[in-house]
Image (cartoon, rainbow, N blue to C red):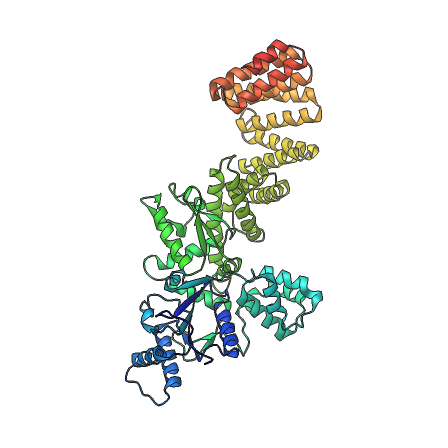
Length: 592
């Protein structure tokens, strides 16, 4: 017989398709049903809406009517019993599809809906990762490029000249099947060239991702509705978010995942939020719910992230230190931000952005120079956040963060980006605080340092002299901020070969530091070392040696003999002695 059962087990084969909303679970299940129907693999296929208990009962009643059209049912569960009894008695193969099994609290007894038959197959679609316990699971993420191209181009004539543009669209949509299908429908309805769609999408993202055709196979009966509603990508995620909002801190969990959307979506480390938790967050943050008595609670955070992952809203893993790292699909991040950027909620978007900036600012301050991976993560987050703030006025409070961000880019060698941020901060400080405010002048000095790093020495000199004149006027010639500029000018003049000018600046800085900070302060010693370098360059051996030895003694006392600054002086002495043929002294430096 064509439908004869070939299995020998006493229970049906159960397979679960798991993935986030829009990952193509329903589409894949539909395609499987279509193909197996053509192949006449099953005697009967029943499609059941498992999004809620009520919809599942209704679907079971429909299936029961198909099996026994004349039967009347006293209760809704009687239809379930009939379907189970009939299918359990068949010796032919059958398939039940439980679509959208996403709410475990509503259908905790889902096993009671399964017939006991060795001839049956059950296919479940779910965004709930816990549903994999029901049987064999297949996790869906995103389409392969060739599959995505086939889906996108099927209604555009498959114009090979537009394949490159199609690839850009797939990348833009994160290769998410439902997003691709909606884009295809949008393009087809408007007869848009793919290149034109790329431009239009940037202006109308929300419209594209919410529009569905009149004849759309992805429909569902939503709670409180009298008829089926076409499901868009955003609708499916709203449904996931509603499932998240149950129990303690329900509203806050939605804010937590929304905050995630303002960082780089690939790698959101726990330290981004835990680093500053003990000191209190600079701005109101939803992350406060993970604090106990002012301290970060890793396990509360873990519970929340696990809940979000259960609904396929994100993925997470643990690093070598046991800290959690979160990853969101790029389209989910896009959607979460879009939800804020409309109607009466633009202030919410600014609020979340300011909170993200505050967390990142504190996080960047905490990263050590040698922590390469964390610095790369911080750079990715800064790149993401800065794209958002470039055209938004976040007020004067943001200007201090600009300095932190500019310094970070500077340290990373991203000089063009650092200059852009410094200039924005400078314009803001000049307008808000005035031309001679300390913050304004520090920013000018930072720009001067940046120009010097880029060998833009004339531009650097202009900035240093501007800062020096203003610091002398505002703070006095002997203030440490003023002396820092004097020392920087000494470095600049040395680079320009203006050695007399450099010596004059170094000596002025040294006298000021000795008076203000003392002879053993590191700023004083740095200037002593600078003078040593200058004298060495001039061939003034004794003067250079005197300065190096003074700096060495000071560093050893202040920082220890193994500190990098101490060892740099030892190296400078070694080079000096080698240059002048004092080999015994070189050997002594080598064994210092």
